[in-house]
Image (cartoon, rainbow, N blue to C red; front, side, top):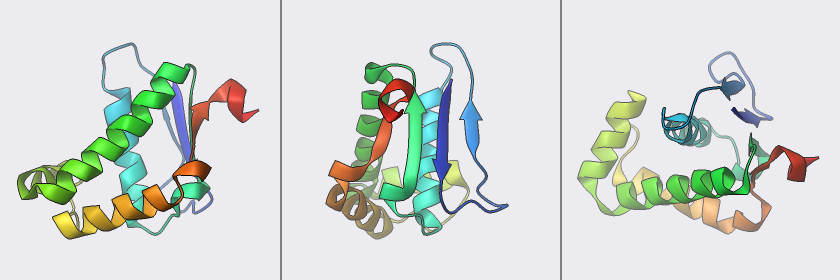
Length: 118
């Protein structure tokens, strides 16, 4: 089970809890939701993503950065991201901007285990 939450909750972007067995796409789902939160104005340092293990938290961070970096340098990857999120906003330029925003506050990201959060 993993949870992602932001201070900017509204009806379009509610809290999201993903509970599923290994290999079912939890990290994929959480990273897409995280990117969507960024799209709608959430600052990366106001988003909380928790999971049970350090390995899983590391995978969430890695995949988030990798997905945005790939989309920033590869228009086809940006198109795939736009399709996955059903939103044409996700161009290479937009993804580069999001990646920059995350990297500037990387030291303040809250992508961690539940234990480390508390």
